[in-house]
Length: 276
Image (cartoon, rainbow, N blue to C red; front, top):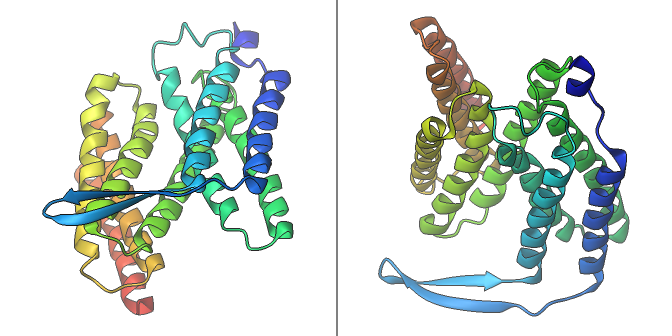
């Protein structure tokens, strides 16, 4: 049983996934697709949605990463026996990482930077999928360390996405909706380690997303830099996630709340002192 829990990832399946993702990125580097603009009326005012080649690439990369991750994880001997964390939640971080990387690669100003970014993307997605494979079972030797690394990755991607969304300075209807979806999806991954049913965890993830969306709406009335805005959203995200996590574990106490309050005060002081 111990050997099954610690079985290494199938490198052949992982190599196929990486090859498909990298090849897709390369093809879209040299294929330019037309842009379509959709004009809608939202809340009494016009709204434009630009469907670009980059949007198509991001969508494709997310789908490929999720499908490939599922293929790799289903090679685990006990993936179907483990009744805790659903397998499809393990698609979240590879999918978000693939989509974020595809978008950032599209912004590369030179071919050299694009190639360097592509290499970093390949290594990152390979390590992330391998880490998800290693955490299929909580009984694995490296579970605690690997899960911590995945949590750090989730927070880093949350910060990057908050900054990218906030810096667009578009309507709150758009930015708040995007941060709501981002926070909800990443909250599902972070809260799933509490080993509770999805039906109990989903409302908490939705509440986290709603709080972040409303916070984005409020921040849009405050003229701060994208980095400060992203940091404030990350602070709120971190605090709410951990309070929800402790509640799901039935460990929420006054000392825990004091700890989160102290972190919040420290970060807010940094924002006030370093802000615009």
